[in-house]
Length: 331
Image 1: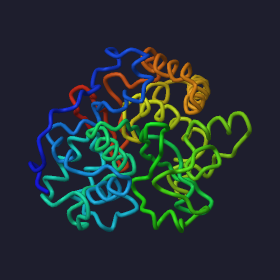
Image 2 (image 1 turned 90 degrees about the vertical axis):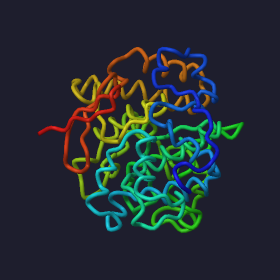
Image 3 (image 1 turned 90 degrees about the horizontal axis):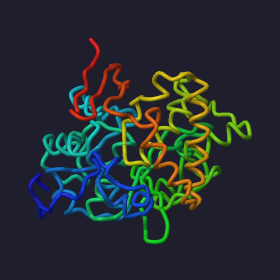
Image 4 (image 1 turned 180 degrees about the vertical axis):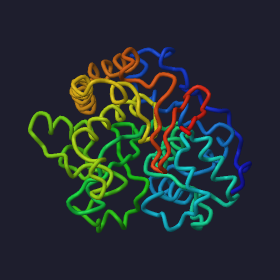
């Protein structure tokens, strides 16, 4: 498929500046998540996504066909493609992928894939679903199925099927779920939910840690990177989970608000409150969902504002202006 193929559809409404334009009531309906965010909007590449299918298997084929994981598939990537891991907006991700090759997104050879991570696989899946009018959002948590005894930070797709939110992991196919490296078999197209599931959310884990003393030492990026594991790491992901739920699908290494310059006690108290609301909202509590929307819109410690600190896994740091979409890397 070439960049210009597929029927060119009108761009779906974007929530680029919608935090002040939509009401809390509107934000409580599943339909709100059918609208593109400033991150998931495919822009000029809308027609490419409009021509693709939306089943979990098709999301998997598309996402993994265009994006190679910068760590798990590092052997497939050369140095020139690695910087794409820091691309934040779906239109830019698609632009980079289509510039690299005009081949269909699904089933590309390794040489035609750009670098990314689970957040990018999921953003592509969410953007594809929203392009087709399907309510979808990204969920932040930790996967217990990649390695025995460790839960890796992870992002998955959640779509509204008309009755409930259904989670799927766009990185995985059915064969993986039938015999995962860790844990019991599961369906990657309909992930079980809850604290004891293969994919507990950051909020669920944080509450279990704070209320019941759950040891979070084995939750993080890698067991070989202890500085990116444990309670403080999970705490930061609670606020990231809130941002993604409010359709600010930021990079996993973007930092802002209380996690950037707030005192630890304040960040902990905020995470306690946000995690409680997130878990209650997942249980169907509309008052909790409304409270999340209000708190995120009104509290500058929770939403990113105009810029975030970007701590790239490529070893560079900088400030990203979310309005101009420019990252200024430190000298």
